[in-house]
Image 1 (tube, rainbow, N blue to C red):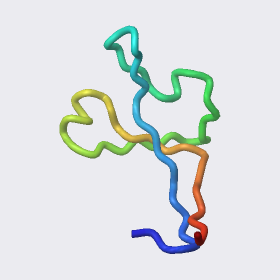
Image 2 (image 1 turned 180 degrees about the vertical axis):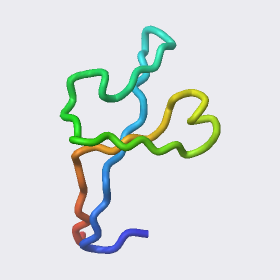
Image 3 (image 1 turned 30 degrees about the vertical axis):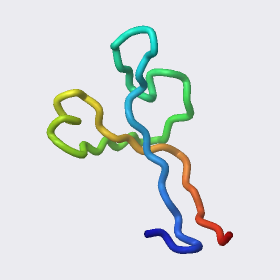
Image 4 (image 1 turned 90 degrees about the vertical axis):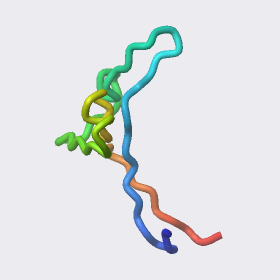
Length: 65
């Protein structure tokens, strides 16, 4: 649960193509890259498929309604 004023980090996964079954790294396309990319695997399937979660430059601040 997030509370007002909390900061949430935005993370990314691999990119999937609608034309092929080949998945690419999120940073294989020209998006803004962080200085250091940290990859976090969530489970064994992520490790085997190369679909770990990576950090981004973005953060979201939770505001009141």
